[in-house]
Structure formats: structure tokens, C-alpha cells
Image 1: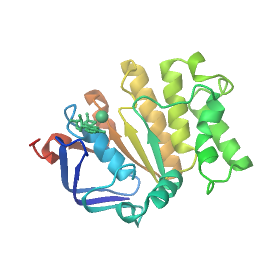
Image 2: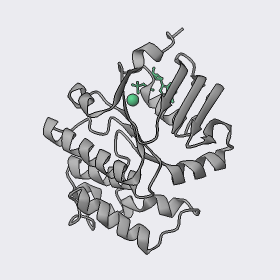
Image 3: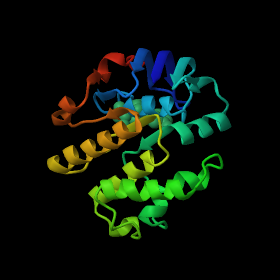
Image 4: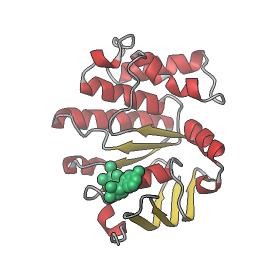
Length: 221
Ligand code: ADP
Ligand code: MG
């Protein structure tokens, strides 16, 4: 599902450099990435999602070389194939929960907002326990509920790959496990692979493989 080969990346501001010799993720696999703060975990997710592009090397997702696509192509590819659960949820306050979940359809002409997509949004929300809160705005939802909205939004387009950046970060231990299980269940149903950055070591047994990111990092020069 994901092949990362020999990539290097540095921000324009300088300082931090990331080098990943090799990383692969199988179809349907659940991989956790752990590692110290500032080691480049978010940077790697952004590279795989095509939000950033590597200076050298290749990144392939579901058979498409994302790192070789032009900007517009990468955006289209991301919208149709990748679900991203951001650390801070990134929900839009002026939209209801349902509108937030369906947001990918607003911004991506290639995605058609039809009855099936609407039904999927509602079914996902019910499965995540927020079926009765779809008309509320994020401000009227708890952190855990906002997190579920973000997960539903990442899954509604039936992506092949779900990237999750410390999505369970600020929840109590019981909610963390429940939310992650929900994410896994929904991803499994859609046949998606999951790559999740997490600080929650108690959640690691739920993954098939754990990668300690510290070993992939080139020292800051
Ligand atoms: P992690 O997610 O593992 O905490 P990040 O990938 O967010 O680490 O950041 C890795 C390093 O890159 C940090 O030193 C951070 O300060 C730096 N960094 C992150 N984003 C930018 C940016 N937009 N411009 C310059 N440096 C950045
Ligand atoms: Mg991060």
C-alpha cells in the first residue's frame, strides 16, 4: 500500500533534515510509528500524503508514485485515496458535524456527493456513536466527539490509506482505546491500511507492527 524508498527532505527554513531509507506498509496493515517529539513523524505523514514533497527518493501509495505527481494531481490523489486524521482534528467551526464529515466532497470536484456518500456519512457517525449529534457544530461537541467527527471525515471517501497523527492524544485512556478500535473497525471494513503516529504506548499491542522513528532520523546538522 505504501512504499517509501530513500527519501530525503528538509524545510526551507533549514535546520531539520529527514532521511528515511525504506518503509513499507502492506494492504490492510496497521502500523504504529512512535518516536520523540520533533523526530519528524508528522513530516513523514505529510510526505506520504503528498502535502510535502521529498527532495530525493520515491513515495508510492496504492501503486501511484505520489512524489512524482504535480501539485494538482497530488491534491486529487490525496482527496480520493487518503484519509488524514489530524492531531488537532482541523474541523471547521461554521459547519455542522455532518457538513464537516462531508467536507472532502465540497473541495474535490472529482468526488461526487451523492446519496451513497450521504448515507455513508450517517452510517459512519452512527457506528462512531455520534449519530444523534450530526447537526451540531464542533463548539457544541466534546473533544472525544470532535475526534470521532474527524475520523468519520477521514473515512467517508473510502480511502485506501488512513494516516492518523496522534489522533487520540488528548483523551482519557479508555476513550483512546475505544476510538482507535473504531478507526480500525471502520478501516478494516473498507479494506484500508492504517499508519498511525501515537504517543500512547498502551495502544501499541493493537497494531500489527511498531516502528520506532528515532532510528530513521538523520541527526540535525
Ligand atoms: P514530530 O511530529 O515527530 O514531533 P515534526 O515532523 O513535526 O516532528 O517536526 C520535525 C522537525 O521539523 C522539528 O524540528 C520541527 O521544528 C521542524 N519543522 C516542522 N515543521 C516545520 C516547518 N514548516 N518549517 C520548518 N521546520 C519545521
Ligand atoms: Mg507531530
